[in-house]
Image (cartoon, rainbow, N blue to C red; front, side, top):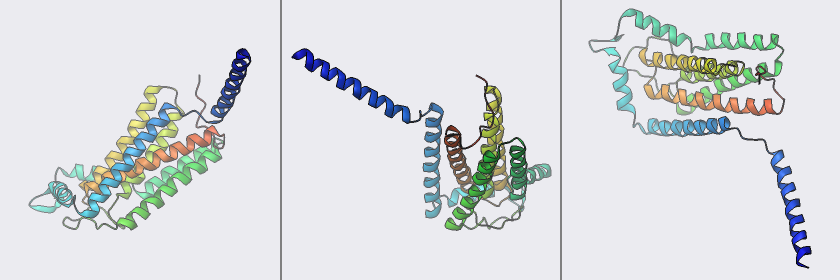
Length: 255
């Protein structure tokens, strides 16, 4: 009698094991890199919310004013510190985050993906960057923070200050394109190099906005964080779509 009960329990356990195995097989494996991306994205979103809260309450105003003033000649607020070539380089750097240059860059990449036989990836890249632009405009409209008005602007401005659109869009575009290019490379060193260049471009653009007196440092930091969150979100969506074979892989990595 006991042996029959034991056999029945073993059969039930075997059936339960098979059922669990089938359920687990239907759940996609969460790769460690995805967990890292989720953790970074969550931390960046939390940091953005904290900075936005401090800005709305006016807690960062003294710090923001001090940094912007520190980058100007005390005797002439229209003259930024450093030689003239530094000011010219700042204008060059800020252009890398401008709508005109980013639109041209995205257009070039889109045409390349289309010629390379990846129309779905092309559409995804366009949607990711255009939607990021809309999110940036919505955030600016929501917070409606005035630009620094105590120093002359050394670059034309058309929207409100928080978060920095140049910083956010450069992070979105360069990090998204950098991740696509890195996925097409086999060398880990080259992957790191490409992503490092994408990060540096975003940093240079943001710093140039502070130097030119058109943004507070908290605007730029919030723009970087918002851009990072959006770029990571798009990367996760692209990863999922590629896993479902709904979007083409950037390249087939050799095993």
